[in-house]
Image (cartoon, one colour):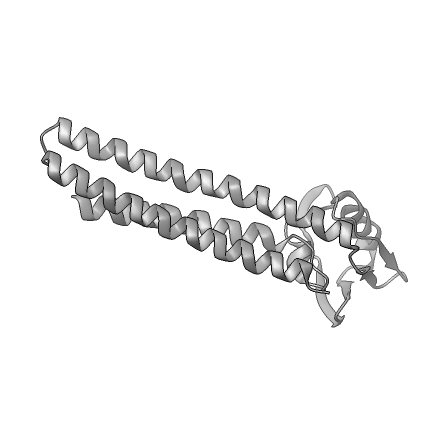
Amino acid sequence: MIEDLIQEVKTSMDKSVEAFQKDIKRIRTGRASLALLDGIMVDYYGSSTPINQLATLSIPEARQIVIQPWDSQAVPDIEKAILKSELGLTPSNDGKLIRIVLPPLTAERRKELVKVVRKMSEEFKVQVRNHRRDANEMLKEMKKEKEISEDDMHKGQERVQKTTDDYIAKLDKVLAEKEAEIMEI
C-alpha cells in the first residue's frame, strides 16, 4: 500500500517538474527559440488557433524567427497576436512572411527574467510540497483506519520526505540551467 502511495506521489511530482520545464521554455533567452511562440493563440476567422497550426515556423539565424503563414490573409492576425502576447517581441512583415528579430537582452532585463524564473520555480516547489502534504495525510488516514502500523506510517513519511527532497533538487537543477542560459551573453 505504501509503495502505491509513493509511486502516486512520484507521478504527481514528475508532472510538476515537467510543467515547470515547459513553462520556462517560454522565457526568452538571448537565442531564438520556437518555444517562445508556444501558447500564442491567433484569432483566425473567429476561432482561437495556435500559431503553429497556421504557419511554418523556422529559425534561419540565432536571433531571428521566421513565420510563413499558409494563408497570406492570416498575416495581420498573427502579427496582432504576437504583439498582444506580452513577450516584448516586435514582428515585421512583408505581406507573406513575418520576421521577429530578437534584440540582445540588457543586463537589467536578464536580471528581471531570472527573478521571474525563480518565482515560477517557487510556485512549482509549493506544488511539490502540497503533494507531500497530501501523501502524509493519506498515511495518517491509513494508520487511523488500522491499515498500517505507526512504524510503517513513520517510514512512509520518511520516504515521502526523501522523494520530496529529490524533486525539489530536480527543480533547483532546472532553475540553475535556465538562469545560466539567461545570463549567458
